[in-house]
Image 1 (cartoon, helix red, strand yellow):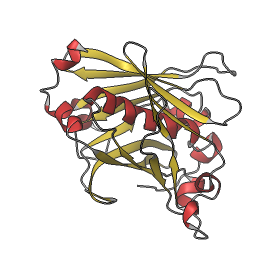
Image 2 (image 1 turned 45 degrees about the horizontal axis):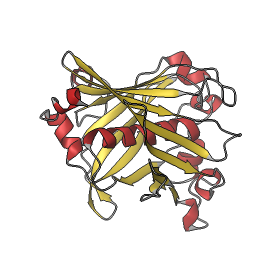
Image 3 (image 1 turned 60 degrees about the vertical axis):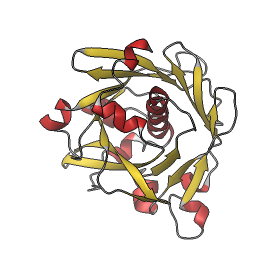
Image 4 (image 1 turned 180 degrees about the vertical axis):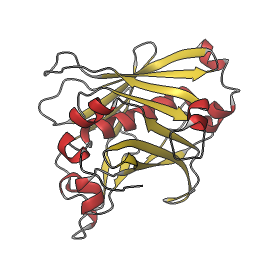
Length: 258
């Protein structure tokens, strides 16, 4: 962590350090009728659940097209870059301002064997610092849905752990009741103490059930260090891509979801 302390004066890192609550807004950006990528906007919450429409930074997926369209979310490879930009698009400006990388190699998983891991690295100028990893531990089918965050010393920091039988996942934003439009995923610290849960918001059947568009609202634990906040953001992103990812056959369907 000594290396990380040298970067705390960096403007991008300071933006994360100043955050208490964030709104993670998910979108699909279509570059052609048959190709799209996922992008997450990290927004500051202004009042209750109202968020600043201008994102603090964006997290864009740079996974290969073949992997993106043909592999299931719980084991597929993906690479995401975090950029200090307010432009929701992968371009030269986006790549120039990248300062964090999430990288999960492809793994052919089976029960407790070769569990998926996503590595979190700070990348500023020529400096690369490993912050930790996000792991999907042993699972019996999908219950409970669990994602764990470990620091650079391989010590547990956070865990998202909840069951998969939630109305928001099965109904995807139907108007029948509130539980279909919003729900909570339980968050725990290293001592298994339950923290403020992560709120997930659905839109409607088309956007949520068919396209897996769920926004997230999270509150950082009191006293959380900057590197812990980065790990928690990475944990939420991996939880979304692992358990809420749309299946390959639906990813091939072209719809404008910007």
